[in-house]
Amino acid sequence: MTATTETTAPILIIGGTGKTGKRVAERLTALGRQVRIGSRSAQPAFDWERPETWPAALEGASAAYITYYPDLTIPGAPEAIEAFVHLALDRGVKRLVLLSGRGEPEAQRSEEMLKASGADWTILSCAWFAQNFSEGFLFEALLEDTVRLPAGPVPEPFVDADDIADVAVAALTQAGHAGKYYELTGPEAITFETAIEQIAQAAGRDIRFEQMAIEDFTAGLHAAGVPQVFIDLEIELFTEVLDGRNVAVADGVRQALGREPRSFAQYVRETAATGVWNREA
Image (cartoon, rainbow, N blue to C red; front, side, top):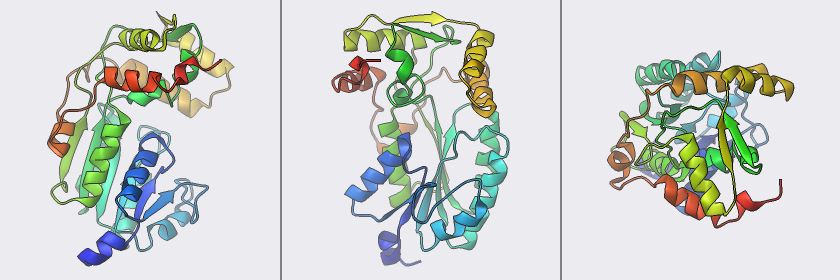
């Protein structure tokens, strides 16, 4: 693929409507790059559970941003990633950027496979997204007066999805990022309780945090009809990933972009200004 072709060929964004994927797509479009959204509703469609949809999504692409729904830790994810990577390489798509989870052993299986594949790989190993409080599973809870989670006093260096997207776009379009493993975190680690206190103050609301037992948390998920695969994911996140292994702040954003990451406080200020946490529950 020539340099000219690389700049005119589409970049495949798997999960292009998700938290990071939509941001990556917006940034690439603003740069004048062609984007191909990889989702079940896109044309051509992309479905991780239907490998026959993968070739059309890869056809003529110059690079791919790989996210796996719902998470790289679920059974079968590493095998699917491996099969996709081999197909991408067979189709001439060598620049592959993988969104991964920091401190997740099963995610690391996919990372090691990608490293050994022969691709021009970049791995983004990410802390918990700040946007989980405004666009993810914590959002609805924040519209209530009390947020109950099986999260103790272990802090987490929440990373802003905008920083992840900026790093992904750099890795997809610029030289110098192949073979790089970027740990992406925010500039400081705070507890879930502190994060919710900051949101409550910025939104001008009285929102309390209560720690609950993991058994009670999962019982509530079962009662709400949440599929078992998502329940298993929540259990792993709250009991294993939040065991203190990820407390340390990393410098992946600065390595990739030459600037400091956005703070959780900055994310809270800007998000609160939209009024999203003041919506009627």
